[in-house]
Image (cartoon, rainbow, N blue to C red; front, side, top):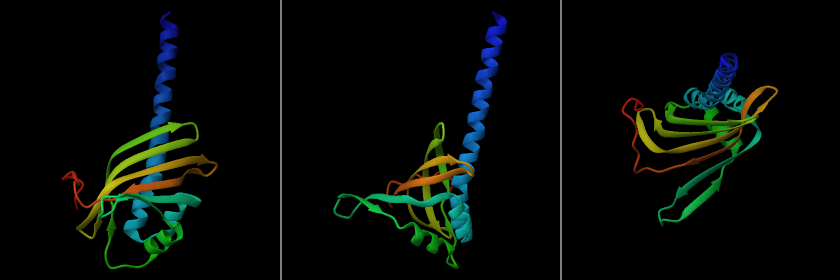
Length: 157
């Protein structure tokens, strides 16, 4: 009986370690997006995504209406790759990663800064697929707001 319990515990531990490794690989992809934004590296940005991913922004407009806009991924790539004097910095926290086979979901809080100047905050929600060349983002939706932003002090620039 002790052997069975030991084997089950070992198997469970290996499963947890495997999930932690997968989560680290997934977060490496997510962090690559923000590194690309900070360094104007459109090549690094494209490496994090499948070809032609879906991107959206959900927000409440000035009239209080809930809106969803479709993003243009090529425009995002172009904007990130443009040389600029200011640094786009989007620190994240409260990472939540869920995995089922080759599908992953990542939900993070973020604050967006241009240099050290706060712009907005919200949530980024990513969906990723694991392919032969690793995890890639195929869907990204973010929320954006300028109020009710509780950015942790250790996240602020």
